[in-house]
Length: 447
Image 1 (cartoon, rainbow, N blue to C red):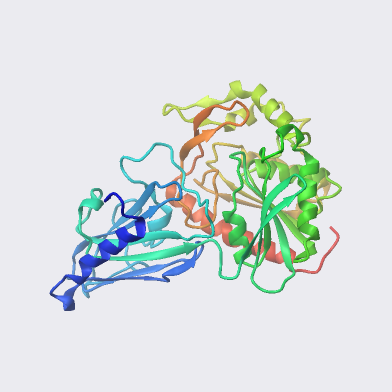
Image 2 (cartoon, rainbow, N blue to C red):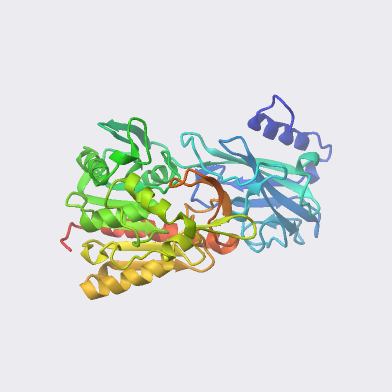
């Protein structure tokens, strides 16, 4: 890439190549629709004006908020009309195969020469994810920046729909961001809890607001002016009350959504808290084997006591799942038999962080004995890993990670295979939204 030229200018230089052709009538054309859309919205691409049976490569390129470049590509052959259509034609090779136009997103990987162990996450959600899609002659697998594309288009992928409002939450010690849908409200509310990676992760909440929910992303791993020793059940109860009492939120139409540690917190809170009483909750890649019933400092200290159970594979990637499987958990498990609202569990059966599938089976038995099994719905996806994110997010089998309990920087094995994991993310997101709407738009009932 040329120094001093930003990403959009680079796209513009690409597009200039198309205008210099003296044979405009036969110049290949690339259409990507929609040019702007939400990240969970499918796009379609069509290439025309190619010779019949021409080998071409469709290539996507994105520069992340961390300034790393990501790419994906598929190998195609034009039909008898000189066209390639994403929803009709198969990729014969590349980073994805089959009739998979969204493979240009979910199979993205860092370009050759990038830093190791990267993970693609949207940090600045008020700006779109810009993706440059180009078509090249021949079946290429490398050296794209040295080649001239036949045609190029840029598509914008947004986490925030037009009209969504972003509100900073800084009440007492609570730190978070509330996203409000367009319109006058009030809206059903969602408390959104991410995992042990820390920080304020906003993109799922922004997308939930784009679908009509007032969603509050909560920062709970040592935000400013708050120690882990002070982050306990009361912190989450105060956050829940802030969401519940907001004038744009329906007080009796609330849900909690958690991922990983966020799921463990969710299960603990809805089982034991006298304050957090949602109408439903969603736990993604979670477990009930270690309750979060004390401060987070004590929780991580307990984890540290079992850190010797962590395994490392031949690629020096840490398998976290073994730590939980080794716990003397029978007396320590969250008593999910106390849960009184509908609960959706979303798991991948190749999760290498938590025994999520085994936990779901045990929770089902516990709830059966307690008489609340009818409240439980379980989604289990073959060959999906731990990080089940919004649709078309790239799959990461292993990335860099900082273990909160030991403060070590490691390469964490998340698990999953790319194509089935992509299917899991697309299918689970539809079902999560349907589950939330089913229980948050219905009249309030006592369970």
